[in-house]
Image 1 (spheres, rainbow, N blue to C red):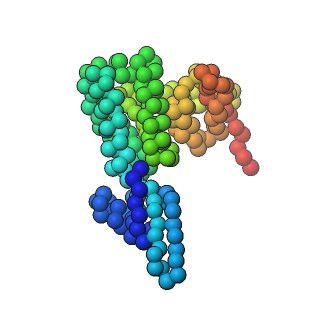
Image 2: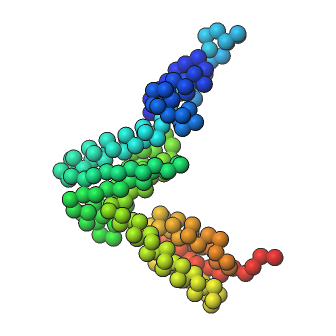
Length: 204
């Protein structure tokens, strides 16, 4: 992250906003140093700050270098949300980028998240996809989970799903959240970590 110094925090944020052509409310920052003096003479504040565009630029540069070293031509599209980033890759061979069962995609996602978190010193929510592979997979697992949840509603018997990654479990948690008489819990360790769809009685 870049460092900025000014007399007041408002002044520094206004300076960054003008430089980055954004609203001051869009700037994420950490105050590093602040000194206040009588009558405001000699006041100063130093912050580390970044914007969504800084994150997007980092992702483009990081992945650009990564794929250049692998000698692979890959197009990169970044879609920004309120507090998240969706990165869609299209390569000469998407199957290689995805890997068996999505292994290469998951590994690259972990590396990118670690680089972002280390650079911006906080957790950046980023989802990496290749040719909408992850999006299609999420659609399939949500459909399958809903089918199982309806079975649990009828039978009152809990169902344990196959082991899956943390992001896939999160998708199902969110998809079934609020469903009548249903709750989801993660159980197991490491590669055996899986989701259990449970029946719950109505709360009085």
